[in-house]
Amino acid sequence: MAGFSVITGEARNRGLELDIAGELWPGVQAIASYAYIDSEITKDRQAIFNDDFTEVIGFNDGNQGHRLFAVPRHSGSFWMTYEPQTLGWRGLKLGAGIVARSQRQGDNENTFQLPGYALVNLVAGYGWKVGPSKVSLQLNVDNLLDKEYFNNGGTFTFTSSPGASRTFLGSVRVEW
Image (cartoon, rainbow, N blue to C red):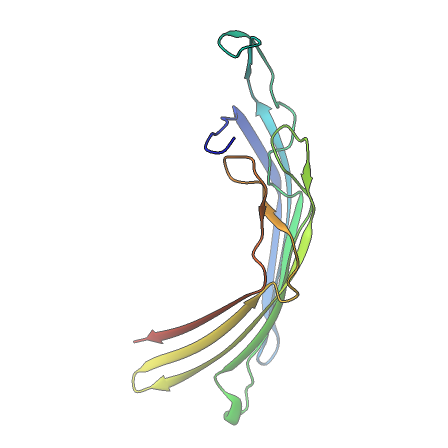
């Protein structure tokens, strides 16, 4: 049923997050991240209704002890960019990255799982000075391989929503 939400008593997310970034060679930047999240619904209480749903006849522990929906146990990304240092190519920026998520629960009852996925993304840009300002053009290609995936379990309605297909996004930025 669309348009309803279910309140969860309490949830706990414990884990570890690691990020590392640096310049590998002149003009070559890399950033890697990883997160491990142990997610658990620690308190929950659900009403038990009579057969015609007109009266509450009791309560149970609901989803206590289950994983919270849409929270991957493992997630990470890796990006590399290259900005040529030679005079003729200065201002150019090229990059590629991978974003990955492990299997997630599709609902708080943990009745179905959303499969993990990995996406490949690209970026190309060019920036230059115009008087005291800097102008930048950029093109991003997200989900380059047009992978079908589910990005989450639907924030409050417990419905699975497909992730975006291959997407091209261009931008122009002026800094002054």
